[in-house]
Length: 392
Ligand SMILES: Cc1ncc(COP(=O)(O)O)c(C=O)c1O
Image (cartoon, rainbow, N blue to C red; front, side, top):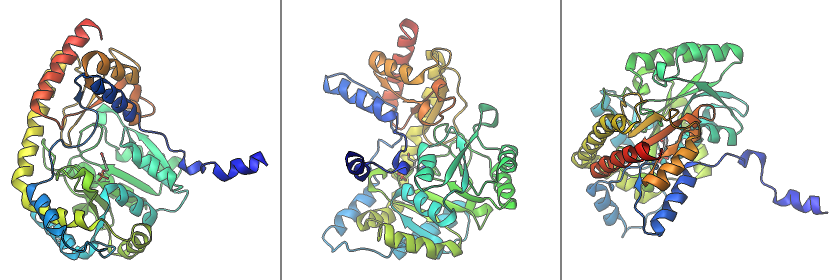
């Protein structure tokens, strides 16, 4: 009887995705702040800036209206505006019919995975990489295949590593990201083109996470949409557009996948929040503000790139894009979770332990997010330096 009752309330196996370790760091930081301490937050990957004023004004103006459901694929004028963005930014003619509005890129992944892969399909993702890639895949019954990358390949999957895994056991999918989280590294257009061509040549279906496009400092990020008509692009208003909490993003899909994704969206969500779609369309008018925010990130990047080595953390690759720096802390600790906890408690700087991004080698790394203010970045460098000299 007891067993029967237990079976009724026990969670499914597929819901058993691992937690985000960064949440533990956030909780500890909140504890310190509640007791009156000051913490410099470099753990959470989001812009400190608000949405562009044009987006906020458009949302305010829309509040008086009915805010009804929209079409499942999104508001037509927003889809057209995004297609125009591809022309303006990448010089690519894109049919707005291929643009699908999603609830952040997070929902874009769910829709793309469901539309492209069957349960049981093996999908390659880079390790280190953004943890929800593998957790969403496994929750949906696909098998995430972690392809180990290294500083030598600037943390990118190479055609050779993809093919070696594919020969071992066939892959069905590949997820690439440039700029990448947690490393902030990018792939040159030629390298991305070669990887996609090799994958597609083997029948491996490609998804490109382009959420950090616009935040590229070393050189301009290339969109997979220019390299292949078969790849699915996932993007978002969260990062460059500073709209994380608005939960709005987009996907560019080959024509054949648009209707299946539309049917999925109709059933899973009906549509994306209308207010957020209206604000997102207006956000394109906020370029000047957004470029100023980006300049702030560039300044922070320079402060950390020169300051952290002086503070004692000198093992990291030059960061090309996004707002992350992935530092090897193995000189000080082989347990980055413990290192992050001590750095928080003793230096008042919160960063994310690498274990979230890389179950194998993450214990030797910390991710720093530099989306805060330049003053905070300078103070963080000072604090870390003092701490490592005295206690670290
Ligand atoms: C690489 C990457 N992809 C996707 C996301 C999801 O973002 P959102 O759902 O807000 O678009 C994030 C969020 O941090 C990310 O870092």
